[in-house]
Length: 222
Image (cartoon, rainbow, N blue to C red; front, side, top):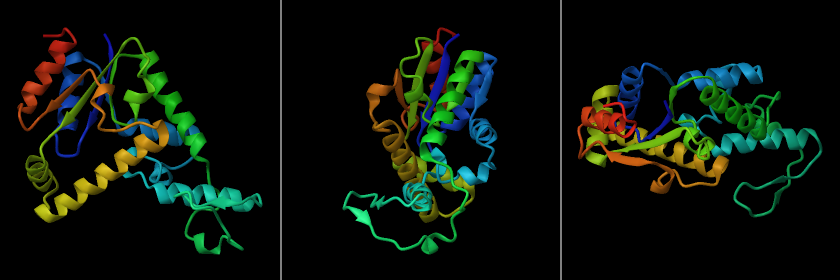
């Protein structure tokens, strides 16, 4: 059976669909377990990886982590938006960031390792975490993306999170920005590029349970 990766917009019912696909296939769905495995391999608490994780990716936070390493080694730190080196006499302005920093390349290397280990070891559904990009040349991988129209996204998130629609919009925008930045920075790819996926399904136009059937049918399991 192919390894399945599912990329989803918040509010597209992607998590529900991924879990149901995994249940139908009789395999595990990997989501938060990926970040737990990365943290274990890096010897960190998973909370320390928040700036690096796709769900909460913070480009500025990652930059500051890298800046601390460079400053500690007496190196120049370049502005994240390409306007030249920053002239800091010390790292005191980053006192809120952990001194025992780790590097972006370390996180990226371990992320690749974990995803490839999952793909090699067992049949699985992998939710997010750049798995589509990491396994894009994997012969036995199938990649799906779940999207939805904004009104449905807002309504679903507001209901699921028990928040006002205005707060749902803010959460959706934050998650979209984090995921898009993560895919661009780590893989030099466009999160929304349909060419990366075998199927892109709009769960506003097709009911979530029908989305599940479509994916299973594409996998030859219906």
